[in-house]
Image 1 (cartoon, helix red, strand yellow):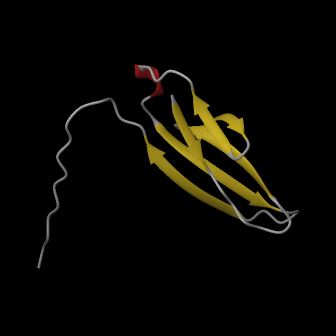
Image 2 (tube, one colour):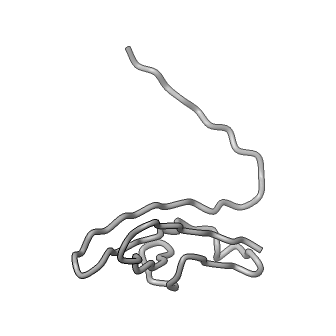
Length: 77
């Protein structure tokens, strides 16, 4: 199971939406994937809108298949 959470502390409470690769997939502070399959490997975004004003806060995470990943950093001076 994969559980993604989006906690927004605001007054009035934020309206939270979830997108997967840019497409709407749900609402609420939690998004669950009971069993992760290959088609679940994607970029997920939590979008919070506050009150009547359209203030948008976006946070995203990328779900990758199991494996070993090497991160490369390049510094250019």
